[in-house]
Amino acid sequence: MKMRNLLLLAALVLMPLISCNANGTSSNAGDQAAPAAAPAKPDLGFLKKMGLDVSKLQAIDDSFDFEQEREFILLEEKADIFKLLPMVESMGEEIDAGYYIGGARALPRGKTMLLYSVEYGDGGTELMGIYDKNGNLVDFMQLGNCDEYMTIECNDDLTQGKAQITNTIMKFSSPDEFSIDKTIKVADWKRNKENGPTSFTKVHWLVQTLSTYEIDGQGRITLVDEKEIKRQGDIDPDYQRRNAIVNLGHLPASDPNRIERLSKMANELYKQLGRGEYDDDPSYYIQQVLAEYFDSNPQTLLQWIYNNRNKKNLIVEYFEQIFANGWRNKYTLVKAIEKMRDPDAQKYLEDLTAQWGPSDAVG
Image 1: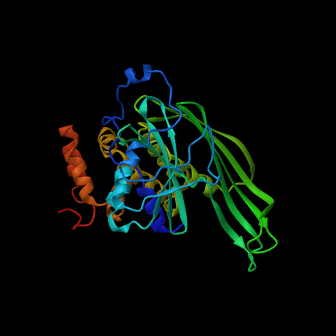
Image 2: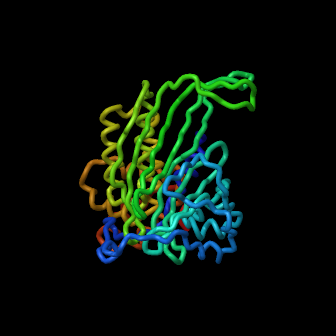
Image 3: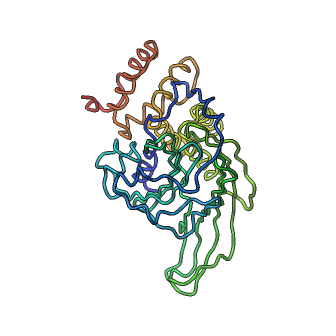
């Protein structure tokens, strides 16, 4: 994938709209006690108020296959994109992508789930947003490319080759519980002519995973369980490492443990591979995921850095690189530190980051 596409993918995450404190916790006992029931159809009034035609918007059924044909709503106006996906606005004029709403589902307690497809360059990704009745984004999750067909090799006639294919099905077991069943495989393919039907002749490797989630009373998503249910063939170790890192970027934006998980993975891979091999590939993807975490909830990340200031980890090193490389504007960091409630932590972060980033980034 091109560097520019990776940066776009990394930036598509939630701004600090999650109702969490700096430690990623909150109280929702009252909401949890409410009965879990949902109307048959989602209330899309907030989309209609934006002037969007939702008459043909695909319903997210109890079993939703991302391969199925469906109607999409193109978000042509930047104001609409920024309203529904506020984090996009920070990317300014560097955005060159198509944003589409590709599904809607009513959730308990007046919440609504929307699925998005984002197309950019030679790639794309799917996003999930949970909204309250007023259309405010309360949680967010990247799903990756759920319906991918990526050609790896092909002949000059385009009649045979090798491809990586992703198939994804989302299933609801109850109004506020769902699972994502994803299969990724690399297989040989052939067809009689360039635009003819494709058949697969050999599967080189395949991995099928199942992740289960719950949605609480405030509309926040929790990963309950994740497991591998099928594997065949010899999978490239580099791919497995890269995929494990990327999957951490698919955790819900409200997950309070994701920074710790990323830090642990970074330290383990560094010890396993050594600096040279580690910097060749894994460190780049970890930096991308860390950038996503900063976008989604900067206060939680900044407080985590302060709370772990006496522990050896790679997070601070990578966090600095995000601004040194220009992947994020230093000004956003300065403003986030100014909002910290803990004066000791604020002073520590101000001193730590004073020389970070390009010299002209602030002002």
